Length: 309
Image (cartoon, one colour):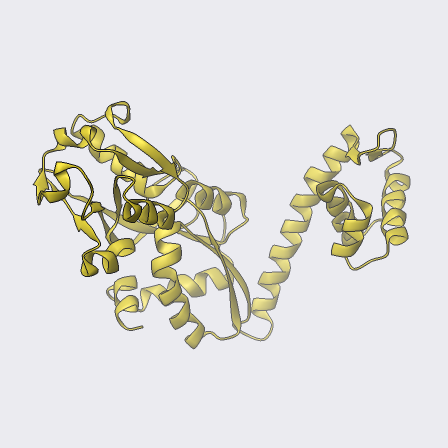
């Protein structure tokens, strides 16, 4: 009969494409890794790795085992994390995801205060765009997430925790007449070179929805660059590549120093909530519930946490 270690070894062999790399990752010798694969094949009486090619590739049966083994290992990790939270009190690892703005500008303050109160709970924070974080929570790769737009609404619970404002900024010396204006109309936006986030970004999802309501479709915009992070957008605007819609949190220092200018847009104020998300059809792990209860202790939620750090 196989054990979980053999499944872990098999998954590593398939994902690295190498017996030696899998051995290194699993702290085993290469002959031991080969022995584990052979024992799995003998147990199931079917080849799991195609040995007729130079590359290590799974057979159809191997692909099936790889898919289920990953699921089994993830469930076991989840079980161990939860059982440890019952043994010895508030202790263990909590996996949280944050979209770019919450992950970089909000969660560090929150985690600092959380760590003061629960020092035995280790936080593993993943930062990606809104869509990636939502998918991670749905798949069980993350227990909780904080994101800036409602995506996958039928599979997730959304709890608003604080507000954010998306503003229109440009370099103070940008060679376009808009750089010298305090306010523009919505119809002027298509004439301005624009830097945006990628399609899965909560900032860009929210901005597009607001512009569409005012009759400005994405096809009308003069997009000169689509970048994968808020910091990349910020630096591109500072370099003079174009203007951008960006969270005020991300450029507050640049505005105060006068490097960037905020341009108001007539009839357009983009305010949004950041949401705490968790699966709608799954019981929360004890550590996830502790984190949620921690946020409830603050009447003004995350805004209060930011101001007290």
